[in-house]
Image (cartoon, rainbow, N blue to C red; front, side, top):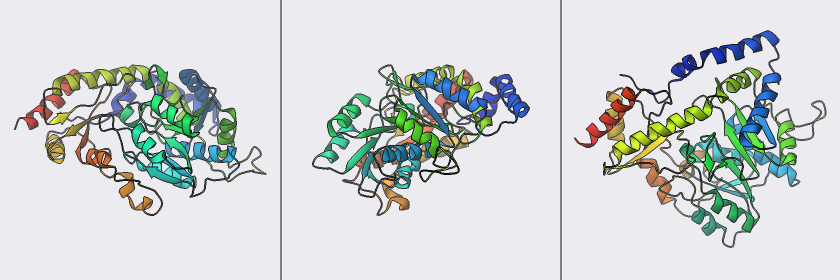
Length: 377
């Protein structure tokens, strides 16, 4: 048996007719740039999230950059300045921190909550005391687990900060029955193929109820101006391809069912592993969409378990082996008020198991049996 982290071929066969028909329409109309599927996809996403504006773009990374640039421009600046600080987590993909640099600001990395792996509101508060140059917060809903948005929004209101949600790993997730991405000033989505809603290439989206931010983002994706022959700002060629919008439209109708399937697999894993003292299973927060099912492996056995599962033809991944504050790109360009010990510990212990929505019961059993076999050796 060969268990993949994600089986996109299986998913394609499951929704083949819908996807093939969507692509066929594109070949028929030949409108490859900002074709009708782009507008329709944005409208469908607005309905899904119940927000005024959804602006598609070229990637999840670009979505963060575009949103940050829009926030700066709305406040009269082409870019943020290095004196402007934006608080985020060091335990995430590099794109979150890199986007802050690309928008001109300085990332401030504070520690995480060890149970959710998400940014800890108390760590944010600790840094904000007597700090006057923080402009905003980027919470990342890591692994599909919602951040504590009540606490984060309360902090943002108290200190007059913007909130840009990184929802790259949590499409369809919620905090207290409110969709993730609808709490802050704006949110960034990713449609990378491995995401809960993934295309067949790169893609992203900015969602916001702020019409000014939406307008700025929209023309930043098209070189920076309402008139492309007389642009106003330093922009990007960052549009979503029509063919990707068509594929995403076809897949959008499956996303809630697939999220439910992910949750069901996660619940089955957790029930099976709950007595394993050398494992720490992920917390079951309502609204989690389990982009990844990520366990902690204690006593320094993470790498050994990963190798054991590899020998059993079970794919696993470590997201993320190196915290952002330790990466070369952030040396001298970021602030780390204190060593984020909980984030660093997590990076040495986490292991993500396969959670393919279309996994069979037999495949789930094989993963469960193999993990337990290792732990009982």
